[in-house]
Length: 204
Ligand SMILES: C[S@@+](CC[C@H](N)C(=O)[O-])C[C@H]1O[C@@H](n2cnc3c(N)ncnc32)[C@H](O)[C@@H]1O
Image (tube, rainbow, N blue to C red; front, side, top):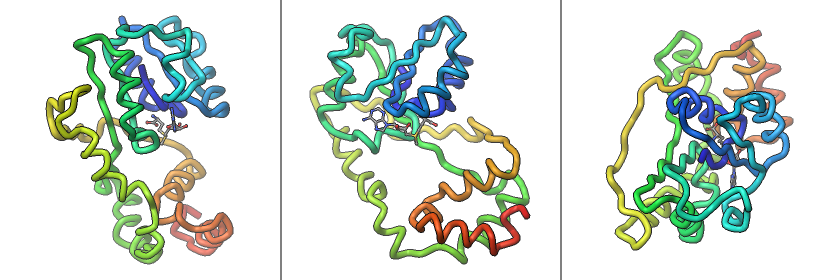
């Protein structure tokens, strides 16, 4: 299962790495479901299911003790609770695995990213606004959830896969990705428009 599949970036990785497995891409948001249907609708090995973690045990698509693995890419912080772990534990086979993945951006891949890191982000970084983002505060809470417990044992602390996913796109996609960084994400839509309009380094 790819929980919180979003637009299917990580689903694509699973499809490629596990061509013989059946993959359930689970996502609550309708717009993402449409994208998942476009990407994987014709793939017999992928079931696209609109649902969210807390309802999964009453979803007839899933049986208890049936899944080999549950992957949550860049999403566990949205539902990092003991009750979510209980749901995952109930759905997994006794020797099943829960994989939690977060992306880390590399800035050394090309000149655009190098310039973004050295020249653009420092100008717009706003410590106070960034401090207000809740997920940074959630990290210790996530680790606490995996303190020795009766549901999951931690087999490893962290593994890093370097350059596992490379995103490519035209300039509007690049700008969209840059603006989704928390540095810019904490600003109002108007402020973000102003920044891209006035700063020629945003690819204009
Ligand atoms: C940042 S996106 C990550 C998408 C995708 N996994 C990826 O790696 O690109 C987080 C996703 O988690 C989903 N999500 C948030 N709360 C959820 C919940 N309670 N149950 C399932 N998915 C949830 C969101 O709708 C969103 O698509």
